[in-house]
Amino acid sequence: MGNTIAEKILLKASGQSDLEPGDIVEANVDIAMSHDNAALVSKHFRTIGVEKVWDPNKIVILLDHRVPANSVQTATGHKAIREFVSEQNLPNFYDMNAGICHQILPEKGHVRPGELVVGTDSHTTTHGAFGAFATAIGATEMSTVWATGHLWLKVPETVRMEVSGSLPDQVYSKDVILNIIGTLGSDYADYKAVEFYGNTISALSVASRMVVSNQAMEMGSKAAIIPPDEKNNEYVRGRTDTPFTPVLADEDAEYLDRKTFDVSALEPQIACQHSPANVKNVSKVAGTPVDQAFLGSCTNGRLEDLEVAVNILKGKKIASSTRMIIIPASWEIYSEAMHKGFLKVFMDSGAIIVNPGCGPCLGAHEGILADGEKAISSSNRNFKGRMGSTESEVYLSSPAVVAASALKGEITDPRTIG
Image 1: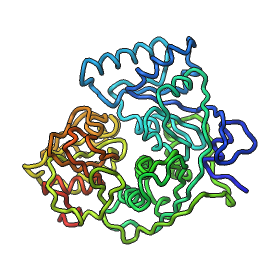
Image 2 (image 1 turned 60 degrees about the horizontal axis):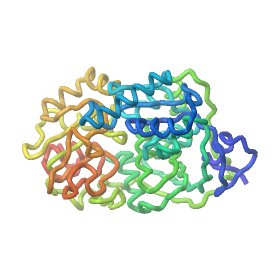
Image 3 (image 1 turned 180 degrees about the vertical axis):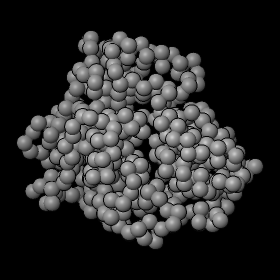
Image 4 (image 1 turned 90 degrees about the horizontal axis):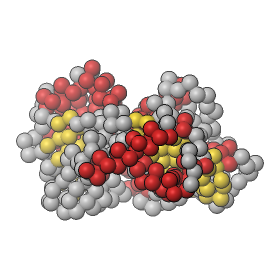
């Protein structure tokens, strides 16, 4: 019996000749990423008794969740991180002028097909879009990775998703993955690897593939892998000189389950309060007033997402009852958006443009919700209190729905905007 992509990557990382789901392997980590929580990781690291990290070139640290620092506590943590980076002479440190971790890793060439990527952030699954086994771990686990370069992992069972059909007008990858999560449930893929196939997936841009792998975490995925093809490999080669070997599943690979989805007639989707799995057609909740519209995050803060919003907002004004916050996922994207004139369109429409970072997505700053407020967001989670008050409501959608809703001041189907 052959192996899935996840199994092949773990075979390589563990140096074993054979394995099967449920086995525990000691795997060599290729890239270890931490963001603001690196302060906690470094604290644990110091208790291990190891003076130096195992490989400075394989550790990536970024500041993105609360940048610039939103409190004395945050500033103290950032200071500790900068001191640790200097002490350990870590070359891959991105201070607050880089962007969101899951955008920066591939943008700076730190993610490659066939590799094992771990991060102290739940949406590390994003990097499965590049054919990597990318998964989240805790701060204590990461401290041992920093010390040894190794990690114990249970080999997950793998689910195969086949997604077919051409996307209808104003329907995007965010709608595809929300529909999958809404159909299967938030715990469907708990500690399972998910591999995405089909002509819909193949036709997606690299940025749109990242949306799928990122949001797949919300159905419990341990890893969310899209088989690397030439589109993917060309992007990676343009970002790094490090050689890599793409990994594909064997034709006779064994899967725990197979699911098929036809998106030919899919409507724009929206996840209602308070779960990413509470998904409905946008028409079912159209007309719901929104106080805030947020476009950004590690899910949908890329240039193509901003362009979708530009095409809807250009020459129009955001509703006076609604505030719109736009956060590009990185400074590179921010710069490209500026040169293309996107930022001028946003400003003219009445939107607020904020520096790259996570801010309102986790309810840290730059757009916290008050009691009773409702937000439409292109981010990935809408748990109770996620973006501020526990008495607020967050609806998740594509950038198109966010922009259309900002215009009308209520949840709006973007297909109705002229």
